[in-house]
Length: 265
Picture 1: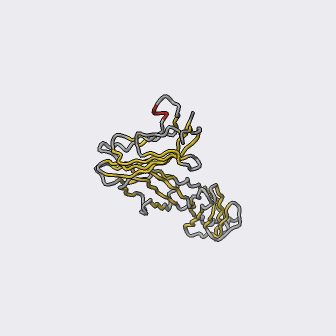
Picture 2: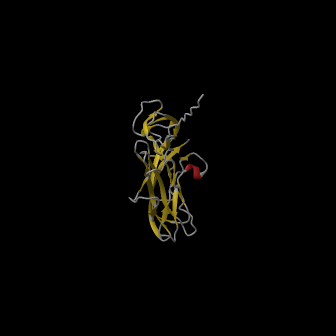
Picture 3: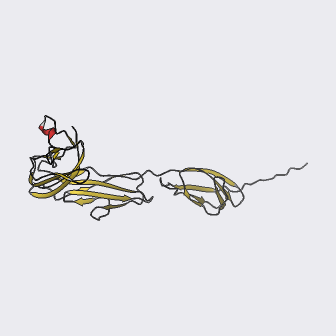
């Protein structure tokens, strides 16, 4: 009798790492990369049972779970799973208004950013780029944002002056009135201005839906009673616009407002 000793050795194990890139929500733009580490080399890569390829990167992938098979130089196979997530839609918000105090020469604008902000490009109304902008004059401002996925969002806001106490300008124009109402405030359509500024000049125009001028005034106390050529106007929607020169904080500013008002009878 004799004893024979046989030593069986195994091939060294393949070491690898998986790296994924999220997919844009509007298109399949995700990717999967397999990085092989150690001394053993890979000979091919397969995704979801597909044909093996020599490239270790899979591109143009939609969000989902993927099965990866890696073949090494010894003919051994290794299995792994990788999940690709979908990016969240880009979101950009600005407050309804930014107030410029009387004792300040301007205000810094900060947006709220959320969702996919990769490769974010921000352009403000005044042509500046970056996360913030500086404004010193009242009026409408906007911010345009675009990310790597090609998603574009436009956010708008208003710059308003505040008085010494930090209170904004108050200009109120109702959107409905009833000419036959016994309440004078409800039977007359006009603009209402706050007490913390002076109105230097004023003009309001009202049109019907065909563009006919129904009413015009330069008097703050004068309003529209819902008549044209001494005839009552039918219930419906009418368009108005107004211009005014205001003085606040020892500064004179020009404003323009527009909107619509509904006559009810």
